[in-house]
Image 1 (cartoon, one colour):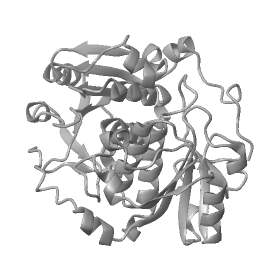
Image 2 (cartoon, rainbow over the protein chains, first blue to last red; image 1 turned 120 degrees about the horizontal axis):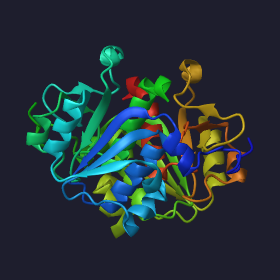
Image 3 (cartoon, chains in turn brown, purple; image 1 turned 90 degrees about the vertical axis):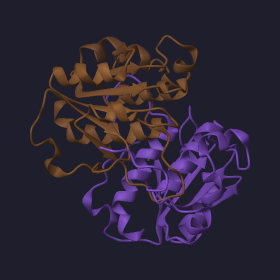
Image 4 (cartoon, rainbow over the protein chains, first blue to last red; image 1 turned 120 degrees about the vertical axis):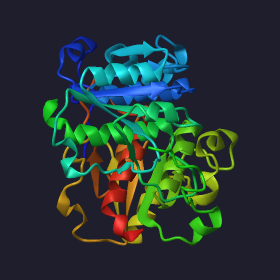
Length: 181
Length: 181
């Protein structure tokens, strides 16, 4: 099996990306401390054409050398907005008809993979909220969301890395929203 | 929705993890340069009870402060082995009846999500090979594998981060091999 070279991959230019149809998914990062994690989420959001990233609280914003180190330029293709408060970001999304889920281990959470009828009523779009590396999504942010979604985990550690979790969550949404691309 | 606290998550101790049944999946990292990526793969492998991680070539091994920074102790729960050459690692796995796939963008690769009949003949186990952050899996390693699997990507960048890719791939295998846990 011959590896494909970069031209055979037929990737989009940043201009083509800006013009392309996006997956109706907004990724909200609240108080994410590590710029490497932020950059990595940009890179995954580029690959799956996430509509927009909302950077909230202490989460760093581009341009930033550490974000660039893992985003590798995806911070130029993917749209983003900054909100001082994640509560405001969630309220903004809900007002505009988005269904907002916190990714968190909580009572009554919906387990991944998402059930087949999860998308039965298609809202304007979906949004997923990821919290701080240690503390997770704040209870007061969860309280404003439509629900929680949760990745099953079977090991010794409390949680997965936030950029890895975002990768799996964005990938799962991309499968469900693929027709929208 | 109330967030669960750490005791409610009922995570395994390292001793319980060592005794627990594992998913029949070996993760091979060849020439992965970043210790943060290595640590992050340990953490994901802990969450999904990967059988073993094969660290090859220049890939760093525990104990190491930078691996610990992202593994957060998962380097103590998940079994690992070091191989100087990934070719030898792949040969070892195939001799023991594993089906080995390189995760790479290549001619004739199998696209993710894996087709329903992918698991129709259950070998001893599966193995997935991830390569260097810049160069990917070496052609001579690919040539020894049973095939390539590939994540679809729709953006501007050449590839996803290796730890994010490993997260999605391990997650997809865990859904298919879940009954084994």
